[in-house]
Length: 227
Length: 382
Image (spheres, helix red, strand yellow):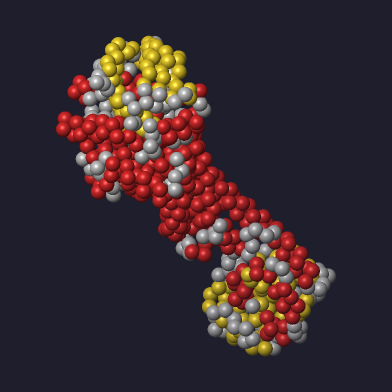
């Protein structure tokens, strides 16, 4: 379970003080499939990175499975991300000099897993996203949709229980985007992974069990679409 | 997959760019190796050049009755034994002795005139006295051939090929010593052993001029070793030549050291610049690593390992370039070709070590900066 309590994140830009998040409180249950929507600059991504332990809030706290992640040292927080969180980005962020398989191996390498296990588990993850046959290809030899699948595999290879996706379909055409969304839906249905994704595509938001709408750093709508 | 594999894959993908980024480092190392090589040849070369300013040790009998001035030395009747000279090869710095020129002084009647007679080994003497200009062929050892000083030549109206009577023996004038402005112009030079026979002084010599070639060891030390090795002699270092030589070598060495230091500082600045820009170019990648759970230790590991690889490659390429360029530039600077043996053995491993250490030191600050990167803003910056 993820609990966000009164989180404020503010930046100063020149003379101006900007609040990207303004006293946001939110509870995400285990196994939730949640969309965060809102216009640009509404704080959607900020919320996502705050949950992922990458952005220290100015006020408030974030509790994941009972541990206050911003009370941890930066080394402990890195370990928390390694073991609990998978990130998926709009621009995929695969390392161009590594093959699909090696990209998926990175989280396992960071965790210090044995090389043979790394390869075995990474291949399993690639097979799960339907890319077992493309394992030895470099990112520039893969289509956008395939690259995003590799990124999804990288996000779930360490058996993270939380998958955070920042506009996962933003750089893909409608059809490919839909495929990625069904893949995420499938992972959530089958493995019960908690998935939170940021989107401003209404049709993507409709797939979620819960939708959180944000404007100006505040949560303005909370919709439970689960039947 | 290990962090090191990751770094190697990254570098090998950017081979061209990595080398391009390391050009500053490669050049710095090349200049260091070239400086080492050229300066070490320069030291030897200057040593050799200065040797040419005459003998730097004069060995004379310990007790002398002053009678004839010869150059700066007063030559007396006392002599030393020629066979004692074999002891010169036994002194500690024997390999630094390049030329030994024993001489016997005396007077002889030449065509009714009493003149100064010097018995010598003409080849050694000419080697030591580079300012001598000789016309004709040098007298051959054990032959009745003579070389004449310019004043005697003209006073006795002799020319090369003439025959001359010295102490009742007939000699052929084979060489003429051009005017030197010294006693030599009034001297008759005969092969050493012939002169000994003529003067009835077999196995005796008056003094020995020694040219010792040693850029680093003081000539005083060699002189002392000679005095100790041979009984009843005094070996005197010729101060002026020694001091000039030491000073020139020191100046050359200081200059090279200064040049190398300046280049090294510039090289380090270049490496730091390269690493700072490498960190900057890879901000997003660092952001991705952090989001996937990399901690600071991991970031240090990948950047410092990259620095070691860059340092090794830069060191090896730089050394190769340095050796090559010193071989090309050496002849232009020193007017003698530089051969492989001129390269100081330590310079290449030392330069590679310097390269690695410099890369590591120069990478510390950029890597520290990399650990301070905010992953979110790094990922958002497109």
